[in-house]
Image (tube, rainbow, N blue to C red; front, side, top):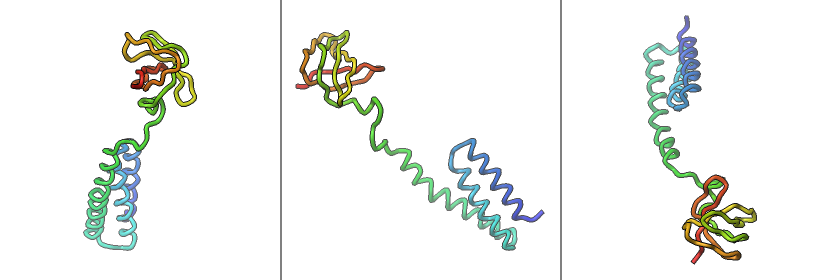
Length: 143
C-alpha cells in the first residue's frame, strides 16, 4: 500500500475522532496527517514524511493552543437573555412587596418582588433589578 494512502486513512480517522471529542487537538493533528499525505504523494521518503508530520502537528498545536486558551478565558462580550436585565432600571406599575408586584423593564412588564422582603415599593418608583428568579425580577428602590 502506498504511504500517502496510509496518511490519508490516518487523517480521516483523526478527523472522525475530533468529531467525537471536540478538543481541536485531533483536528489539528488530522490536518497535519492530511498535509503529510500530500507530501507522500509527491514521493518524499518516509523519514521526511514523518518530519513533516511532526513539524506540522507540533506547529499547529503550539501555534493555535494559546489562541484557543485566550478565547476560552475571555468573558462573553455581551450578556443576553434574562441575565442582561440584571442591573437595569425598572418602573413600578403595581405596588411591589416581598410577595409580589409588577414592574416595567425596557418596555416589558414583569412580575416582581422586593429584594428586601420587608420593603413596600409604591407605584411610580424607579427600582434596580438585582436578580431574576424564573420570571420574577427581584428589585430594590433606587436611591
